[in-house]
Image 1: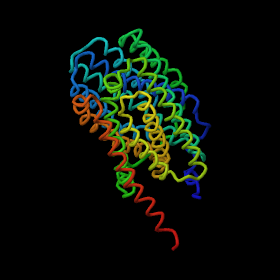
Image 2: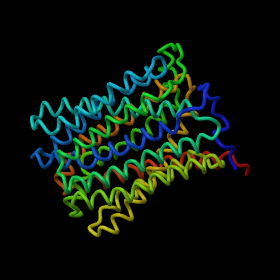
Image 3: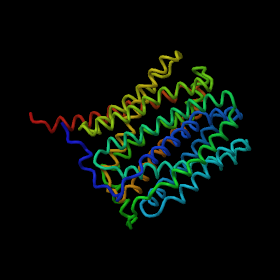
Image 4: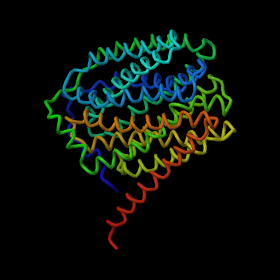
Length: 397
């Protein structure tokens, strides 16, 4: 059995016990917000009369804003205090949510999505980086609880917002969510920063250009390509292909996300017990791809079953990529390096959003899931042949 990867993780940079209770509360709320935006904002935009291409451009704009912001935010987290950035991010998200009620102008919508991208990226990246820096010996357990909080929040957000939109309409629901986002100021105010380091910026480039890190970045890009399909077509697939209203869509999504959260949590425990994170990563990508293809089924219950498999695969991906990043980079530079990796992931999602927006509209929102699922399966098979084949070569004849 492999020695647990967490045994190699470097000592904690935080002098006092980290505030993981507050962190996980904020993560829960941001997870809920993220799924409201993922599923119901495209429905709102379609209701405005926007085309699939226009929706893809708006979603892609939010993603590409995150792309350009990821590395600076990561470097800031290594070198400066994060409180002011948190407060600005909260303001940006509230402006986005409230602003949707006051404009149908495409240019102003672009501005709102830029603010959304900046706000979400700032908060989510700082939370991720704080957790990567502050975890101790049992990284799998820490990361597992973190991802459990995030995706239970996602499921809760999908369920409650779906019901709210069914009874209150989009505009009032978005305003209520804006008030809830404002309440995040309390736990954010109570957070303590991790220690800062003086770092040579060129060192980030040296870290990234190591062959193993470039290959890892390529794997992340291929995986996150399917995020573009989800960002542009998931809610529309549930409405147009499965004929679900917003309340039933919320229930469908929330059920599946419970399994994502549990898979991430259990995956962390397995890693702490010695299961190699690379092998769990492959299993996660494979499950994700198979589920993405097979969920395209007109029977809601069959579709739900395969979506559960997809989300379980995503859960394994999220926990293993966290552990993998924590092992690849020195903690004092993990903020900037995580920013680089997240930039790669966001680029994958952006590319997918631009590709799958028009494709979804032309195929009743089914083809994006099939195409992106096939890419995931191919990635898992190639990576599996490489890693498992490498392991077999090491065994004595």
